[in-house]
Length: 232
Image 1 (cartoon, rainbow, N blue to C red):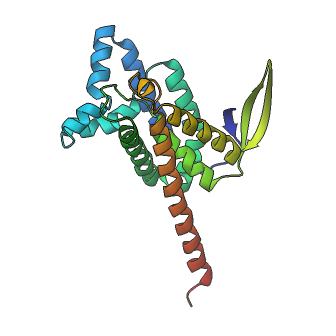
Image 2: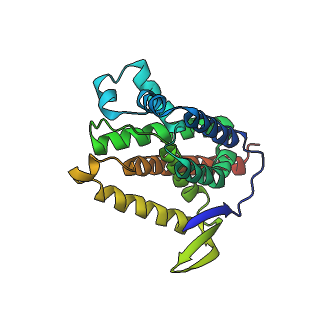
Image 3: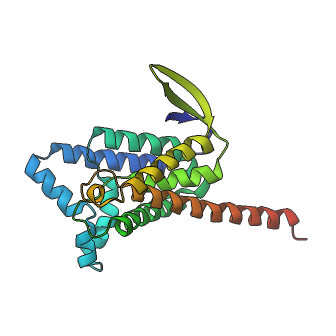
């Protein structure tokens, strides 16, 4: 299933989501302007490298890579898919959490995603980069806050393409099961040392967003209950 839009209106322009997308695109354009050697050096310097981080976890540069890595991408499909998901789901989460809250939420999900991949993959020297972990957090929050929102989705069926409106909890649940299954399969030594997709970054980011959204939804219910009781 490939989501292409949601039928979930927002109350205000999602400036933070737009700014994050613009920053990711700007960094990718810069990456694309570099020669092969300069690009490899840029990726090495500013991606999150678990072995390097574990060797100097309090280094300012290594701490910075927890953030810089989530604005870097490895190719057109990588950035295109990530930005599509961020645009579809991020605007509603920003609308719900507020602009400042969304910034903190997004960065927190991205950082914990990197730590989750480190915990699962160990001290690998393979650079980790991409917004996928942070965007997985957005998906986790969306599943809690808007589970029944209609997602316009492309569904390939053999040689045919079906476009349908599917509840968010089914689209996101299917996505999460794919990440979980792929993550478990990646735990074999051969796969974990060969690079590829950082599945546990996706899982860690999703769980982070899911838990934060649960807390936010509980706080909203308490606030409504308090306001509904009314003070006289």
